[in-house]
Length: 387
Ligand SMILES: Cc1ncc(COP(=O)(O)O)c(C=O)c1O
Image (cartoon, rainbow, N blue to C red):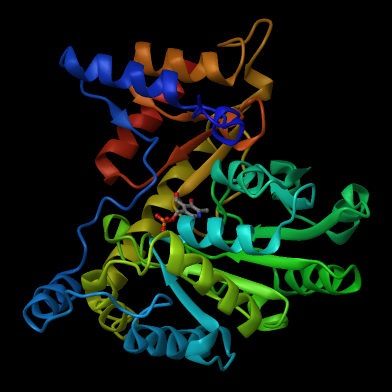
């Protein structure tokens, strides 16, 4: 009865772990949850107020499928300010979160059998979204030792005549990768030389700990589709606002697709786009970004004192991807990363996500979207477990 397309979707790799977390919570155990994927801060008050005013002002009907013109104009201002590229509202499509943008952009670019390059570790949904568009994901393995650097030489090795595009994601989930300007320029050059499109997922764009990021969109706005949104940078995961900024032909295609499969993104949420983006230097937001930087420092400091634990320092987002291979297997603390995650949960009440979900074994992802007191406790317990 169920279609082949849906039958082949991989169940979430975190399913077993989540079931265990729920079971422990029910029995009254307090879990230190470092598996979370969203800011633990409330949406700033100035944005909430904009939403409440919008409801009274009648932002309650359908908008254009690609999004309300005022919201798209605000995105154009934001892209010019942050990427130094002038874009027209006809190049912007607002959708129900960055994930929805990714899904529709891939459906608009990928034909059956097309191959799409992406670096591994990758965000869990990338391969599934490529497969849903009947494409073939081609992961390119990077390592913590090399700071998860992705180079044209590595991409070249996977290139075949069926390769049509690359997905990039910076700041990255799960590694926090923020590449140098030279590395981004080299990857965009590689795409140009091989006539590949690029999707650049920049949903963590304001959560930067060591200086600016370098958006591939700035290097080739015709070839690169920039995807971002309000979810992470504005603590607005539940509001479901994402956007794709790309060339007019692709934006038109995505808009047509969206007009039939979901109409427009939530109108009340769209009403907050200008308030959020124009308020980028609001103290509430700066406070959140500072808190994430301090937590990143705390995690890096604590974990670097534990032997056999390797990671590259995250330059952005709120994850740290830890390579435990030296501590697993024969004579180690656990058989593999999944076993490690289960033991850490059962014996030390800490939830983390095993690396298999991100296409890499022997690793776990720790989220620092939790208060410092919890992070300190978690580090102490991990230290004790690995001692
Ligand atoms: C890399 C990446 N892209 C996209 C998303 C989804 O963003 P949204 O909530 O706006 O759909 C996430 C959420 O975890 C993510 O980590």
